[in-house]
Image (tube, rainbow over the protein chains, first blue to last red):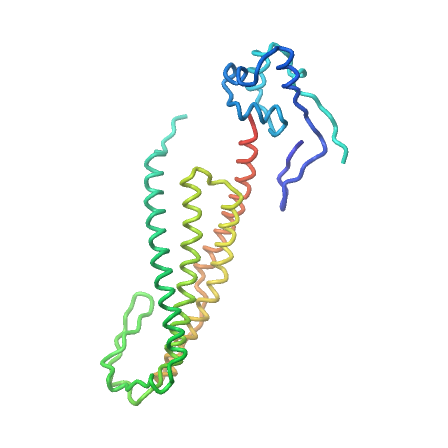
Length: 84
Length: 200
């Protein structure tokens, strides 16, 4: 979902980036808390990432996660167009 | 880049400002309550009880901006009824006090949220917007009420060769406009804050 600042309200477009972090964690047999310690990101933020509540992710954060999970960014992020 | 802003000292000062504002508002409520009670008392007092003999008046002090004029009591004669003037004085006091309390309460809310490290919130943008609109309304309302009071005083005391000019203090207009601009800035800031908080 992309948010843009308009004159009156924040609008959402109909694109959606889905995170598959839970799938990758299950494949690596790793808990979210363990990942949180290794990448030095709070459990709350990782939980938000897992449930799709974040709006953006920094490349540095993505790099750390991919390094720890030994995966590609495409393994964690997936594009799925939302129906209106 | 090194930060030159001393966060601890700032929070210390903000805490003191918040406490002072809290007590000023409490005192304001007390004075407002007394004014309202006074208004109601004067409203229901029989008119005859508020006749005032001008011969008892030694002098009147009238202040315009920073200048105080003293008018000698011998200038005024006769008996005047001051009930309507008192009512208008107390009404004007309520309006002025209401405006200052409105400002103080909103500033206290802003200071409170800055003290809690959440300056860029949508609620703060709304507070600033209400402050700006309040200033623009007050610059007309307060001027009208104060001018009305002066006209009533001039008529009650039968002061000759005196005119009361109505004018709007432009500095209130400028302050109101600046605050409305700040409200827009804080609104955009709250959007950026939300984007920042949801970025990992």
